[in-house]
Figure 1 (spheres, rainbow, N blue to C red):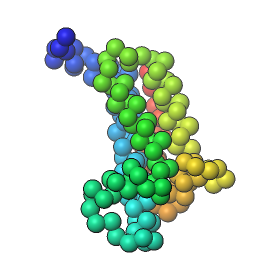
Figure 2 (figure 1 turned 30 degrees about the vertical axis):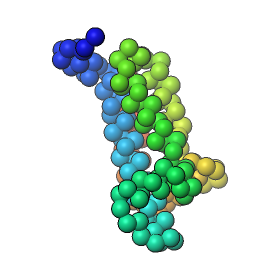
Figure 3 (figure 1 turned 120 degrees about the vertical axis):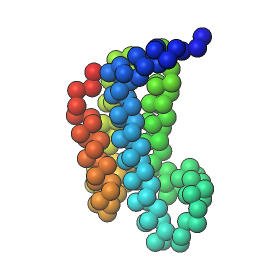
Length: 143
């Protein structure tokens, strides 16, 4: 059954939809800042990345960028929730927001994502700015 434009407008203005959309945009900004920061470090060591396509292949397949995959996966999960209007509920959104808060917690003593995230925050002002935006988004009343 096709969704009418009125149903679409109502869905897109619901508090849950707005919260997820805002968090998604914030995560995409953070993801982009992290990719740029990692690309600069990667290029200092291995040489110039010649194209966006090459960078995409590196982000998807090179071990250097693997630590970013949990962030990419969260964006995909948000997209799936936003695409399926019947599955959008308070509990799922709350769980997802808890996961986002847990993921973007840097740690100098940690490993995996939290350690790499900490290091990116130390060397890239754009990552610090995007992190600050995410923290603001996640501190707002969600529902």
